[in-house]
Image (cartoon, rainbow over all chains, first blue to last red; front, side, top):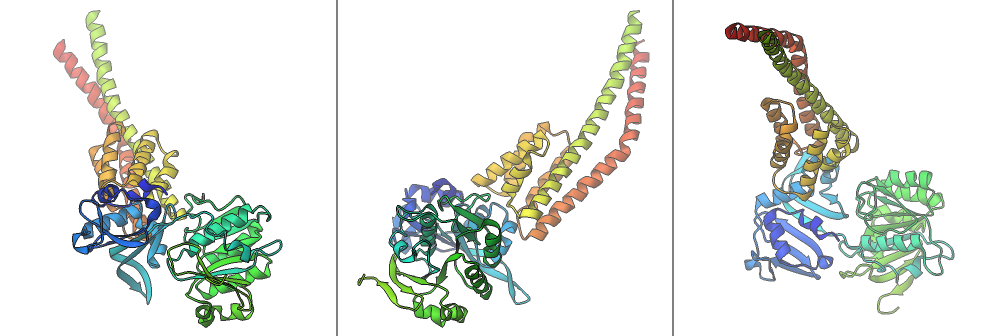
Length: 318
Length: 171
């Protein structure tokens, strides 16, 4: 992780405090700035405040208060003084920056014809730092390897449980191959630039030697583009969420490609109840469902199910 | 003989001095065209790839005049390291290449103003500012080009007349 790159996202005052705090950046997960509120860090799996001397504290009354000017300046730096370049992303309330870090914003939304056109008067910023945790997918791998390929796999996890981190490592392992398994050509449709963290089209994260990345490409179009152009054996996408994604998933499966995908959810029942996934589950498109633990350890499996819903692994039971 | 040589020198220097002014005007027009070209490239870069400004600037830098290339690269670098407001970064970097820009203070001020409006709001507003500036530069170029032959005549006449007057006074 490039520390300087992260520090450069903040105005000098905040930058100085973060610098003084001598943080281990590998253990910083989130930095939250709210106008008139404390500077909050999710550090070593705990919520901490930063005080005016740049020391971490758990006492809110000692915390450094972020001003609206600092939030505005941060927004300018985050967007490289080019908010127009992130217009489409801002409509969804976040933008992804170099390194694959996600910056969530909140403020006054501009609505036009019942649709969010953008966000102005941004007063809250949440910077979620992307972490590359190599080998975190090792324990998952045996469950998703078929004899000579991989199963169609859906990773289910609540937010902030490391599903993107797990997917990233799975892609790397499948692409590179292991001692007894040959590497596979993987196409990554990285709609939000979070998986590969591409900069000028070049992945900044290690996704393996046989991986092609379509950066910033909508999933629906990207999946078909990848099939036509890169003839992948495996396609990986993050966060399925709309009907178009589901249609594209069906096309991928019909093309003979294997699919790795993630979705927000807390249990397999939770997914079954979502109308979006009902058909996919009824048709048993996904052959493996990996359910992640609600802990801060990326890739920590809670359970694994097959296409029939039979539990293949349960945490604590093995 | 000495008087004759002296007179020729005075006449020549008068004409050359005025030609120097004329050349300055030509260089100014040329630089304005380079600036217009830079805006055009920048606009295309933003329109096509929606790149953030530092990326767009770096991409087009090698297709611009050396002085503008230096300005674009330095500005992009400063924007990446994020110090201060965009307007400040823009004018600071413009000031460092100011000496090498054969344009007037008025042209520089107009160019600096562009930095005030860059980066804000949406893509359409961004492009409108850029197009507006391009139009202003275009109008300035047209105006200067139209006056160029007249200016040349004025400079030559003024140079000759000035030298002749000086000659008469000295003789």
